[in-house]
Amino acid sequence: MTQRPPTRDALDDVPLSALLYVTRGTYTAAVRRAQAKVGCDDVPAAAEVLLNAMEWSGASLESAVRFLGVSKQAVSQMVDTLVARGYLERTRDAADRRRVKLSLTDRGHLAGRAGRTGIEQVDRELVARVGAQRVLHARQTLMALLRIKRMNRVPEGRAVAV
Image: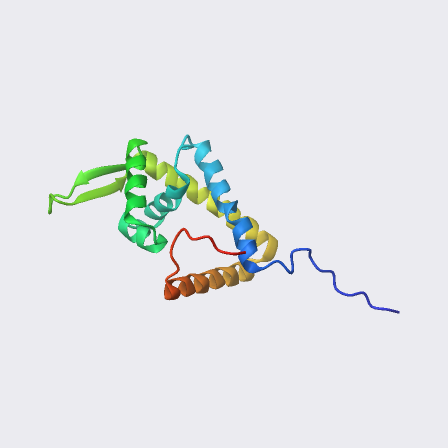
């Protein structure tokens, strides 16, 4: 009796870089759906991570921006938009009037909580499909990739071959 070779998935030979590229919108789509359900459908795509970080961990805007590695100019424009749409508010720092403090409004908290709901939905589906251990390994792999990027100081916004 001849043994059949193991079945391969058509995506087995696709480079990891290509898989990352084509799946990048999975979380974004889930976050956008969850935010739309609560009336926050005008959060700029680039700002979702900032709102989520500020809501989830109480991270300051500055630390979230540092993690993302985006330019001050891009953040300034994003903050202006978030303030205009009612997600952030600017207040003067009582200790140093030259400084401006940014904080989430009630609407910002709502958008952040909704974002977390969308992210957790995708996370649960991933665990159901591949198991918690594999999701943990994927997370560790992505963190290693982030460290490589930072070590090599890969600039933001550059096209990457897939």
